[in-house]
Amino acid sequence: MTTEVRSLREFKMPDVGEGLTEAEILTWYVKPGDVVTDGQVVCEVETAKAAVELPIPFNGVVETLFFPAGSTVDVGMSIISVAVGEGAAEPAPAAAPAAAAAPVVEAPDAAVPERREVLVGYGPRTGGAQRRARKAPAAPAAAVAAPAAAPAVVVPAQAEPVSAERPLAKPPVRKLAKDLGIDLRTVTPTGPDGVITRDDVHAAAVPAPVAEPVVAPVAAAPLPVAVGTGDVRVPVKGVRKATAQAMVASAFTAPHVTEFIQVDVTRTMKLVRELKASGELGEGVRVSPLLLVARALLTAIRRHPEINAAWDEANQEIVLKGQVNLGIAAATPRGLLVPNIKDAGSKTLPQLATALGELTDVARQGKTSPADLSGGTVTITNVGVFGVDTGTPILNPGEAAILAFGAVRELPWVHKGKVVPRLVTTLALSFDHRLVDGELGSKVLADTAAVLERPKRLITWG
Image (cartoon, rainbow, N blue to C red):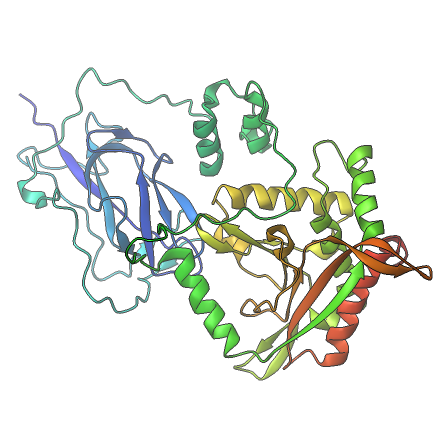
């Protein structure tokens, strides 16, 4: 009788980007006994930056889930073990003695620095991450047993093998297909090298989902408290925790100055209606007032590029940025996110509209990647969608300016020597007074307003 040899491989919480030290497990997509293959998404985790899905980098059978959903786990800690070996989804990495009956947990050579594979983020790195001190160590789930005592997992002979012809798609696209009930094997790929894209999934839906025009970010889910009840304590973690820390750091580091201006946007609102009706920006491209506000601000920055800068405290230098990465503040169920459009200043109006629509869609789903949340240089926050006229926005750390776009209202306005009803909004620009003086800030705000008042300047100035 031949003894089947297996070994256990442990998958550790990867650094999903920018040196983050911990992540919360939101959902497990597998359970003990499930067959998994290289690249299969096994769980979704949330960091201070974004929610991402983690694919496992090898084949086998799930042995143990070390932490239940809802647990916060340090980067580098094992979160799942998978049995690999003869009869499993992947051959054993090395031959083992026939007498070995218990699984062997693989461990890196202590003399060699560990090279952790970063599955979602910015590439592999060597060594462990630096972690914050924790009040109490996180305990693995009660279901975890000592490896030596755990019986070898045998794949049932009748288990169906996983198809090798697995459609090519990124994890967010797989999640979208799952939410829409679409079998990726029935979708015709149009991406490079046969990769299925988000548009391919939408095209395969019957009927195809029609997105409503989005002119503002999605409102965040209310905290679980009702009037007349007792106090409710909500743990501060993930995006909310990171936002709170960033805002405190910004408010007490950068000297804020905020200036306001009211502007007649009647012509801009007319242009929005005309662009929607004509479809000249492209089929399916969303046109909103926020789009023209973004273009107006980018036009002002092109005229005054000194505002697209950052303060380098360590070197006591002002860093003039080579491109405008335009952030759009979005309130989501996960908290405040500020994804940014890379090199927004170089985009045409149709390209900017497409990028803004894609950014909003991804933020709505809570799937914004860490890369899209980093590197912003200037931000717009659309408070008008909530019926708010204006505010004094706090700068995102590392940025020089943030523009608040208020509600558009019909107000009495002096136009061509007569008081008539016009569509009016209020803009508020906050800037870092260490690197933006009053003259530069005023010019940027005034030019933004001038473009919105007479949008033909988009052509003459842009």
